[in-house]
Image (cartoon, rainbow, N blue to C red; front, side, top):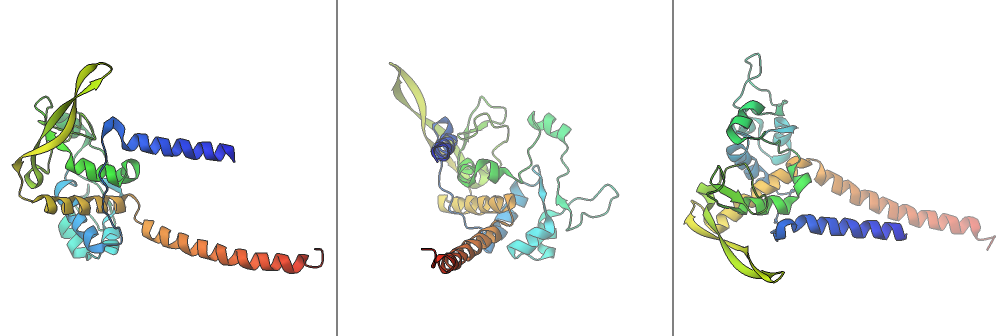
Amino acid sequence: MKKIIITLLFAIVSVHAYASEGGVELETAPIDINDKASLARGAKDFAAYCFSCHSAFFMRYNRIAKDTGMDEAEVRNTFIFTRDKKGDPTKLGDVMKVSMTEDYARQAFNAPVPDLSLTARARGANWLYTYLHSFYMDASRPTGTNNIVFPGVGMPNVLWELQGLQKPVYKTIQHEGRDVEVLDHLELVQPGSMSKEEYDAFATDLTNFMVYLAEPVQAERRSMGWKVLLFLAGFFVLAYMLKKEYWKDVH
C-alpha cells in the first residue's frame, strides 16, 4: 500500500512539474469531444492551418466523416487535395498524409515537421490551448516569432492574421540576490481579424479536434467504463449476498 501511495505522489508531482514547465501557467481548455459541431469546425480549422505541413497518420478521412457529422463529400472537399503514387485521387479510407517530404521540411524549417496524431495525448489539451495563444514576436528567431510554452519553436506563427501580433512584457524580480528579468505577460500590438472571444473559440475548436484526433474512441471508452463500473457494483452486491447465503450456517 505504501508503494502505491508513493507511486501516485510521484505521478502527481511529475504531471504538475510538466504542466508548469518553464514557469508557464497553462490555460484551461474548455473542450467537449461530444460536441460534434465543435469537432467539425475544428476539423476545418485543422485542414486550413495545420494539414498543409502536419500529417495525422493514425487517422483516416472516413473516420472523421463518421464522428464529426460531416458528410464524405464535405470531408473530401476540406482535406483531400493529393493523389497517390499512381496518380489516382486519395481515397477516403486512406490515412491523413501530406505531400511535404522530410527533406523539404528540413530545408524550410531546419527540422522534420511532426505528425500531429498523438500530440494531444503527449502534451495535453491545456498545453495545446495555451500554445495556440502564446506566440510572440522575437527578432532573434529565424521565423521572427517564439512561443512561451515551446521556447525555440521552429514553426512560424501561421495564426497571426487571426489573433494578431503580440510582444513580450517583462518584469524584474529578485533571484538569489540579483535582479532577473522574467516574462510577465504578452501584449497585443497589432490586432488580427478576430476579436479575443472569437480567437478563443477558434482555439477551443482546434484543440477539441486534436484531442479527438489523438483518441477517436475516447467517448465510447468512457461510456463503456461507466457501464463496466455499474456492472461490477451490481455484481458485487449479488456476490456478497451469495457469500452470506453459503456461509450463514458456518457463522
